[in-house]
Length: 272
Ligand code: NAD
Image (cartoon, rainbow, N blue to C red; front, side, top):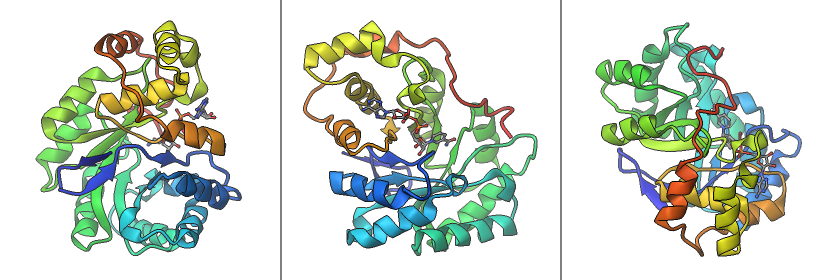
């Protein structure tokens, strides 16, 4: 299942995230993910595992144009020359001549350098080093400022998003701007009992699937781009096997009803 971004590039809607994947195990874990069938990998400079991701890609023999690789600029590198340098470092570590998507990891409003940084992202895109460019953890006010000061509208905004923190107003805003929504922490990072909530558990029982599969399916049916993380090959396969059933409108609405503004990660206004 592919989603077409506002720049015409297409992205596999279901991918594999590697936050907190140990750099020493990243090559094996990403190799497993590619063998299971994932073609979209979401990493970041700060995860420290770009080299392992790159080795897995090289070893896989999968044609480059069948893969969609995202990485992210870390906060300390926002600026002008620091951004160009950071892009080159990430590409070298990944062993690639371009990424499919490069993201500003956090807005860091306290630094007030995300617009300057974005202008360099536009340059990186025009040079072909990043096919698509986007942001992460940006709120409406950050995007309003950025769009007013720039030529390119971000292709995506990657934000914390799971049933208890479903971000409906931000998703609506992004839809209006033509920006695709990507979910991080799609399973709530295991930090609350999402899988035990009746709306999720009942749908799982009704369809004969697991609660994790129900939650991933909820993201997909909301047109959200999603890349759950796991170190286990069995769970990789489970999380990828979500196209054989469909949640009903009532099941979707019941899971929508779980929203309680429950943030499990940092607040973008104050994250450093
Ligand atoms: P997640 O919601 O994907 O949760 C991962 C947890 O869920 C792990 O503990 C894993 O063991 C468990 N899990 C996975 N599959 C399961 C299954 N089938 N059954 C039971 N448990 C299962 O959290 P995440 O890793 O934080 O988010 C996904 C990706 O989003 C990351 O790997 C990373 O690529 C990205 N991310 C981005 C940011 C950002 O600031 N942009 C922040 C965090 C994560």
